[in-house]
Amino acid sequence: MRTKSGRGDVLLVCMVLFLVVFGLAVLYSTGSYNGSVRFGDAFYYMKKQFFENEKDGFYGIYYENPKGADCAVIGLFGDDPNDYMAKCGAKWLHKNGVNVLCTSPGRKNYSHVNYPLERIETAIKWLQSHGNRKIGIMGISTTGMDALVAASYFQDISFTVSFTGSDFVWQGFEQGKKDGCKEWPVPNASTLSWKGEPLAYMPFVYEHPKYWRKVEEETKGSGDIERSTCLFIDSEKAREHTEEEMIKVENIKGKLILVGTDDDSFWEAGKYIRRMDQRLKERPHTCEYETLIYEHGTHFVLPESMLRIALPIGVKFVLKFVFRAAKEYPDECEKARKDIDKKVSEALKEWIQ
Image (cartoon, rainbow, N blue to C red; front, side):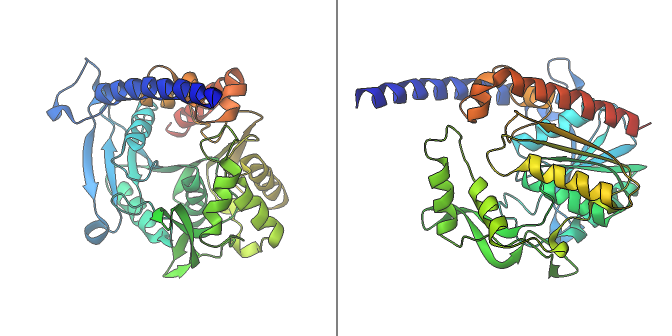
């Protein structure tokens, strides 16, 4: 009992320190500032334009680059385009010379259920009609998959970055609170839809509430804030993928960057990227693609400077309490993030020429 109490006290102190640092970061780097420039840095003021599904055909916020730009990236960051992660992603993309349109299913909508791809199509058309000569898309985690699917459907997208995205479409799922579960699969639903029909998808082998119970079992004692690889490994074992549910990455145009790690605690991102690499080798394609697979980097394998916008100090320290790999291989994880930062930034700069 004494040992457990001691560990709990240490964790509590660390969490308090994290909240203090995070709070200072939020205070320092967010807000509209009533149109004024804060701390002498023009990047801290972002001009916003809001969009609603009912009125505009998609939900999102357009963050115009304060230094001027004629290319735009659709950013699928976080669960709402006005949340902290989305703002940090927009600032990072601004520094790389583009305008940013952050989108999501709806205001504080944490579901991934039959999201209409037509909304991204509408967003592309709006960007093109407002002075953007090139359109890109970037997604993280589940939306890394969304970005790949969208790019495979819409050939006006000429720059695609998927951070830890899968090579197949999944069953739809909800997030929130239900029967003591934080997430659950939705029967007979996909994550995405097109022309009113759900896309073909890989069904999860576990139904509610066993789905979340399996996540809890795998997470317990793992050292990760969450582990859900069992959902994907067991579902792939239960049945082979159909060709219909696989993402047609060979249809993607322009530049394609696939980013993932082999120590991902959510799903097997490294394996999925290798499969996409093999698919592209076997099929005719016109995109110029790059696979960035790292042995260590965690599920949160993002550009280092993007994370430092979110958390100016203590990135390595904080991640140690989120992912086991970040604790065991902090230098390797940081090296991966810095390499991603360099390569994606260079690709963006080349694309906007």
